[in-house]
Image (tube, rainbow, N blue to C red):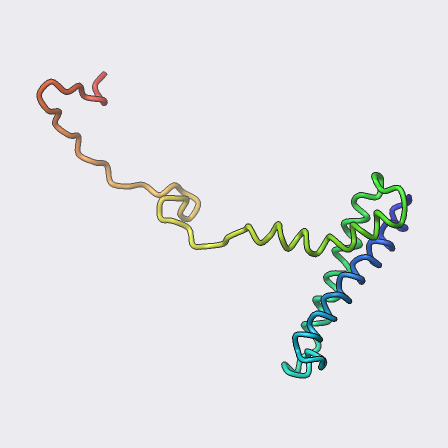
Amino acid sequence: MRWWQAALWGLAGGGAASVLSLSAAVVSAGYTWPWRKEGELGPRLFVLFAGLVLGSLVATAAHDQISGPWPASIFGIGAPATIRGILSGVEVGPRPDSVLTRGRRATTAPSQPSVPEEGEVRQDAP
């Protein structure tokens, strides 16, 4: 299968996943258009477009391993959910104080050497 054929079938698969998502949104909105409540159609169109692009990209990337239109469509259908699942494990938070600070390693004040107890061996001794 050529890359552009895989891209088109992946686009169709991404469209199928987006239509399914839209139908679920219509049902959850009480069988009305979901964008009527929020007043914005733009974000919904962005989600639709993103699903189409992701489906097409994944199928295009795997075009050498795809033997026909059905597998390319499956790649397109599964791409948005797969990538969403992968990214759900990514957690972004503030850096702890002990990691790099402004390009240099944060240093702590040197601790005072401890006095060994009787019979204890010092670890810092040569």
